[in-house]
Figure 1: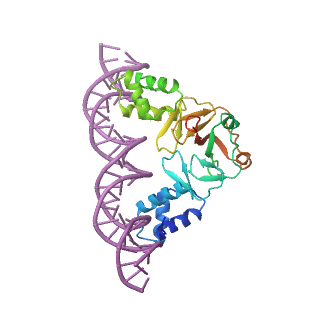
Figure 2: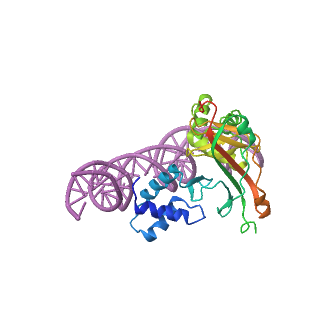
Figure 3: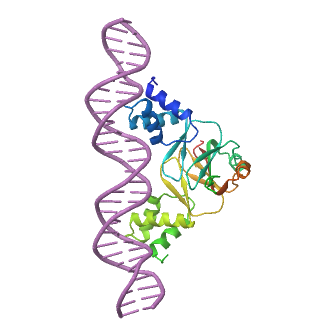
Length: 121
Length: 121
DNA sequence: TCCTTATCAGTAATGATTACTATTATTATA
DNA sequence: TATAATAATAGTAATCATTACTGATAAGGA
């Protein structure tokens, strides 16, 4: 994998924020520093980075992929109203059932939906 | 909500299987009994049933929505190789962090990825 | 039975993501 | 350092799951 300033920029953007942006949000952010960057480049690199395990993806009910630069084991909370995604650093326990059944777990994604403090009024 | 035989059929199909089918799979299944049913009808009713809480949706890495007729609290295991989705009836504990932060949880979706017995060779 | 309108079949549109192509830039090597 | 090979890019076209639209059909209350 060769160096490219576009990929470096995209990586820096994701690693530098905690709001779990979509490809489009990252694209807009990237254009501020690299106005000619293409949306395709953003998508291609996001996929690449996710495949390499440098970032992780989050499949939500809003039908867009969200990206997370924090690859440590943690869960997420998503507000039903404002869509904000919050990190939960006390992850859920992996069910014992999995080990008992001899299933190899490579990854886990726990998402909790509800209403955040701002939207709970 | 009026009765329709299409919606009843779709509901029966989802409730009657445990393989977490996609809209397309449900469509194919439905056409065996109702050859003229339209894909749009399947999608519309699936959305309707999910909104009503009669069924639940499962957002996975394969970019298609999967549906589950079992609305009891449980998690899922998805095989990285064959894509099979297995129910886990000993669900993960909801992190205490959520209650502490005063966040209202309405729903939770925990997905574990790995290799099932068939694919673990 | 008649009327209102939810639902349908069939098809067009949408929108996120991916693929393609000619050009540019990285990097190994002479 | 110059050159060659080719990975990566910008820009655009294509894909594909899902949703919206439209005229016809059918549920079900009066």
